[in-house]
Amino acid sequence: MCLLLGAPGVGKTLLVKRLQKLSSRDGTGDLGEPPPTRPTVGTNLTDIGAQKKITIRELGGCMGPIWSSYYGNCHSLLFMIDASNPTQLSASCAHLLGLLSAEQLAKASVLILFNKIDLPCYMTMEEIKSLIRLPDIIACAKQNITTAEISARKGTGLARVLRWLQDQHRTSS
Image 1 (cartoon, helix red, strand yellow):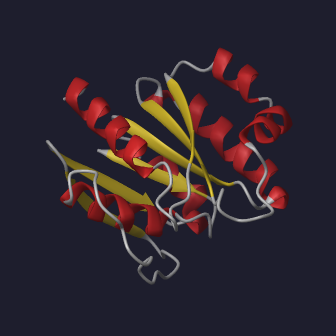
Image 2 (cartoon, helix red, strand yellow):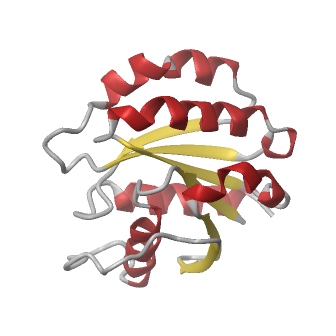
Image 3 (tube, one colour):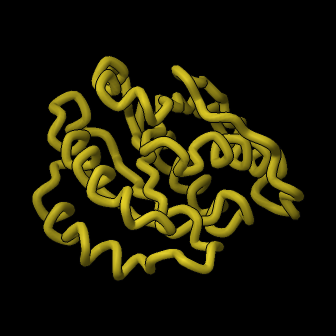
Protein backbone atom coordinates (compact mmCIF):
# COMPACT_ATOMS: atom_id res chain seq x y z
CA MET A 1 0.00 0.00 0.00
CA CYS A 2 1.17 3.50 -0.83
CA LEU A 3 -0.33 6.47 1.02
CA LEU A 4 -0.75 9.79 -0.77
CA LEU A 5 -1.02 12.67 1.68
CA GLY A 6 -0.87 16.44 1.62
CA ALA A 7 -2.84 19.58 2.41
CA PRO A 8 -6.14 20.30 0.65
CA GLY A 9 -5.74 21.56 -2.91
CA VAL A 10 -2.15 20.45 -3.52
CA GLY A 11 -3.08 18.22 -6.48
CA LYS A 12 -3.25 14.71 -5.04
CA THR A 13 -6.27 13.55 -7.06
CA LEU A 14 -4.87 14.88 -10.32
CA LEU A 15 -1.56 13.16 -9.59
CA VAL A 16 -3.28 9.79 -9.12
CA LYS A 17 -5.30 10.19 -12.32
CA ARG A 18 -2.18 11.17 -14.28
CA LEU A 19 -0.12 8.29 -12.85
CA GLN A 20 -2.89 5.86 -13.74
CA LYS A 21 -2.93 7.10 -17.33
CA LEU A 22 0.87 7.15 -17.52
CA SER A 23 1.16 3.58 -16.22
CA SER A 24 -1.30 2.35 -18.85
CA ARG A 25 1.00 3.82 -21.54
CA ASP A 26 4.25 2.38 -20.18
CA GLY A 27 5.42 5.86 -19.22
CA THR A 28 5.39 7.24 -22.76
CA GLY A 29 3.27 9.54 -24.83
CA ASP A 30 1.35 12.74 -24.27
CA LEU A 31 -0.96 12.72 -21.26
CA GLY A 32 -3.36 15.13 -22.94
CA GLU A 33 -5.50 17.66 -21.13
CA PRO A 34 -5.76 17.26 -17.35
CA PRO A 35 -8.97 15.52 -16.30
CA PRO A 36 -11.42 17.35 -14.04
CA THR A 37 -11.08 16.70 -10.31
CA ARG A 38 -13.00 17.48 -7.15
CA PRO A 39 -11.71 17.84 -3.61
CA THR A 40 -11.40 14.43 -1.99
CA VAL A 41 -13.70 13.96 0.96
CA GLY A 42 -12.62 10.77 2.65
CA THR A 43 -10.34 8.37 0.82
CA ASN A 44 -9.79 7.09 -2.71
CA LEU A 45 -8.19 3.76 -3.56
CA THR A 46 -6.58 3.59 -6.99
CA ASP A 47 -4.63 0.77 -8.58
CA ILE A 48 -1.74 1.79 -10.77
CA GLY A 49 -1.18 -0.95 -13.33
CA ALA A 50 2.57 -0.85 -13.70
CA GLN A 51 4.86 -3.92 -13.79
CA LYS A 52 3.18 -4.88 -10.55
CA LYS A 53 -0.16 -3.57 -9.30
CA ILE A 54 0.40 -0.72 -6.88
CA THR A 55 -2.50 0.46 -4.74
CA ILE A 56 -2.45 4.13 -3.82
CA ARG A 57 -4.66 5.30 -0.97
CA GLU A 58 -5.26 9.00 -1.33
CA LEU A 59 -6.55 10.69 1.80
CA GLY A 60 -8.29 14.04 1.61
CA GLY A 61 -6.24 16.89 3.02
CA CYS A 62 -9.03 17.76 5.43
CA MET A 63 -8.57 14.31 7.01
CA GLY A 64 -5.15 15.26 8.45
CA PRO A 65 -6.26 14.71 12.06
CA ILE A 66 -7.08 11.04 11.35
CA TRP A 67 -4.36 10.16 8.81
CA SER A 68 -2.71 7.96 11.44
CA SER A 69 -5.67 5.55 11.24
CA TYR A 70 -4.39 4.56 7.79
CA TYR A 71 -0.67 4.06 8.51
CA GLY A 72 -0.89 0.28 8.93
CA ASN A 73 0.38 -1.77 5.96
CA CYS A 74 1.94 1.34 4.38
CA HIS A 75 5.13 0.46 2.46
CA SER A 76 5.59 3.82 0.76
CA LEU A 77 4.40 7.37 1.25
CA LEU A 78 3.89 10.16 -1.26
CA PHE A 79 3.71 13.51 0.49
CA MET A 80 2.70 16.41 -1.71
CA ILE A 81 3.49 20.08 -1.12
CA ASP A 82 2.09 22.95 -3.20
CA ALA A 83 5.22 24.79 -4.39
CA SER A 84 3.11 27.79 -5.40
CA ASN A 85 1.52 28.37 -2.00
CA PRO A 86 4.00 29.78 0.56
CA THR A 87 1.25 30.36 3.15
CA GLN A 88 0.57 26.62 3.29
CA LEU A 89 4.22 25.66 3.69
CA SER A 90 4.47 25.74 7.49
CA ALA A 91 1.35 23.57 7.91
CA SER A 92 2.72 21.11 5.34
CA CYS A 93 6.03 21.00 7.21
CA ALA A 94 4.22 20.25 10.48
CA HIS A 95 2.28 17.42 8.81
CA LEU A 96 5.49 16.02 7.32
CA LEU A 97 7.23 16.04 10.71
CA GLY A 98 4.25 14.22 12.22
CA LEU A 99 4.39 11.57 9.50
CA LEU A 100 8.12 11.04 9.84
CA SER A 101 7.88 10.62 13.61
CA ALA A 102 5.05 8.05 13.40
CA GLU A 103 6.33 4.65 14.51
CA GLN A 104 4.09 2.79 12.01
CA LEU A 105 5.76 4.67 9.13
CA ALA A 106 9.34 4.15 10.34
CA LYS A 107 10.09 1.62 7.57
CA ALA A 108 8.13 3.34 4.80
CA SER A 109 10.02 4.97 1.93
CA VAL A 110 9.00 8.59 1.44
CA LEU A 111 8.80 10.66 -1.74
CA ILE A 112 8.17 14.36 -1.10
CA LEU A 113 6.60 15.93 -4.17
CA PHE A 114 6.82 19.66 -4.80
CA ASN A 115 3.84 20.13 -7.14
CA LYS A 116 2.69 23.04 -9.31
CA ILE A 117 6.12 23.98 -10.65
CA ASP A 118 4.34 25.01 -13.86
CA LEU A 119 2.84 28.07 -12.15
CA PRO A 120 4.76 31.34 -12.46
CA CYS A 121 4.72 31.99 -8.71
CA TYR A 122 6.19 28.65 -7.59
CA MET A 123 9.02 28.49 -5.08
CA THR A 124 12.07 26.56 -6.21
CA MET A 125 12.96 23.36 -4.43
CA GLU A 126 16.01 25.12 -2.99
CA GLU A 127 13.81 27.88 -1.50
CA ILE A 128 11.43 25.35 0.01
CA LYS A 129 14.25 23.17 1.35
CA SER A 130 15.74 26.22 3.03
CA LEU A 131 12.44 27.47 4.47
CA ILE A 132 11.44 24.15 6.04
CA ARG A 133 15.05 23.06 6.76
CA LEU A 134 14.57 19.92 4.72
CA PRO A 135 18.21 18.77 4.94
CA ASP A 136 17.86 18.70 8.74
CA ILE A 137 14.55 16.84 8.51
CA ILE A 138 16.06 14.23 6.18
CA ALA A 139 19.14 13.82 8.39
CA CYS A 140 16.99 13.09 11.45
CA ALA A 141 14.38 10.87 9.77
CA LYS A 142 14.37 7.07 10.07
CA GLN A 143 12.90 6.78 6.57
CA ASN A 144 14.60 6.85 3.20
CA ILE A 145 13.45 10.20 1.75
CA THR A 146 13.52 11.28 -1.88
CA THR A 147 12.30 14.60 -3.31
CA ALA A 148 10.96 15.55 -6.74
CA GLU A 149 9.64 18.64 -8.45
CA ILE A 150 6.53 17.88 -10.50
CA SER A 151 3.59 19.36 -12.31
CA ALA A 152 0.63 17.00 -12.12
CA ARG A 153 -1.21 19.29 -14.53
CA LYS A 154 1.48 19.31 -17.24
CA GLY A 155 2.88 15.85 -16.47
CA THR A 156 6.39 17.11 -15.65
CA GLY A 157 8.32 14.65 -13.49
CA LEU A 158 5.55 12.03 -13.33
CA ALA A 159 7.55 9.31 -15.11
CA ARG A 160 10.11 9.62 -12.30
CA VAL A 161 7.33 9.28 -9.68
CA LEU A 162 6.04 6.16 -11.42
CA ARG A 163 9.56 4.65 -11.53
CA TRP A 164 10.00 5.42 -7.82
CA LEU A 165 6.71 3.67 -7.02
CA GLN A 166 7.72 0.64 -9.10
CA ASP A 167 11.11 0.50 -7.39
CA GLN A 168 9.53 0.68 -3.92
CA HIS A 169 7.01 -2.01 -4.74
CA ARG A 170 9.65 -4.25 -6.25
CA THR A 171 11.61 -4.23 -3.00
CA SER A 172 8.65 -4.50 -0.61
CA SER A 173 6.12 -7.22 0.17
